[in-house]
Amino acid sequence: MQLSNPASATSSQAYRADDRNEQVLVYLNGDFVPRSEAKVSIFDAGYVCGDGVWEGVRLVNGRVISFDAHIDRLFEGANAIAMDIGLTKQQVKDVILRTFEVNGMHDGAHARLMVTRGLKKTPNQDPRFIIGSATVVCVAEHKVVDAAAKKRGLALHTSTIRCSTPDVFDLRLNSHSRLNFIQALIQAIHVGADEALMLDTNGFVSSCNSTNFFIVRGGALWTSSGRYCFNGITRATVLRLARENGIPVHEGDYTLAEVYAADEAFVTGTLGGLTPVAAIDGRRLPTEGYGPLTKRLADLYQAYITAPAA
Image (cartoon, rainbow, N blue to C red; front, side):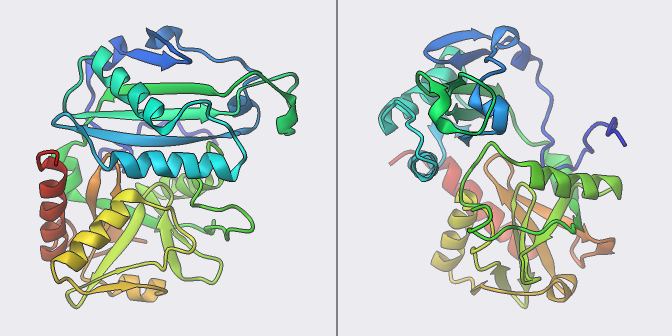
């Protein structure tokens, strides 16, 4: 069954359309080329077998949010798969900043930096068949989440696809290989939901297919142990802000039954920040949109990302 319907207005991947994005220049291995001309070989390792890592960053008032943390995560992932990016951390940051600059972006923008192992002699898995250096691409876009859609909240559906253990696939790797998460999302889409809620191999709540998941119970913030979910930078920021502001935090195992009895729920991600959840598996939450603690945390996060650079 093919998926032909456009993303819903409340999808966690949805954003406000901006015609300027058709004219952006894309960074491709040292050059800036028009979006329509940005191409890599069918023999590139990223195309052949998803061999690469990536980062998405957000530009707000001239500042890339949590820039160092994103670059550190990129290099940690590249190191884990023994891939040489071919650039220093500062040079990678410069690529992102230059991409924003050449496209005249200062605010309300998002960039995805993608690094693959590079061109291969033949389409196979073996990394020793690489010819030359890594492929480095940076796509910057004018991209902001629609405020009205975000306020309405997401509908989640619990997927049968589980989050993997580190010995199977380490979710701390921002890998180009995302097929298991796409499978989970397809299940959610087929039942009319916006995002998939995923459990870990022990049946505890772990993550969503592209975002980190939180609930609120009795005035406390709950999230998973972190052993089987994305190493979310926004997730870590929200946990830090909660603790700094005296909000009780439970970071550990909890069940789907406890989710169904939650007062509030939300997801976190680089582009959307905090996005409220309205329903899970057809069950409407008491607050549906922004509950009081979700709103407080969203305000704290907004103050963090709009604060002047130190």
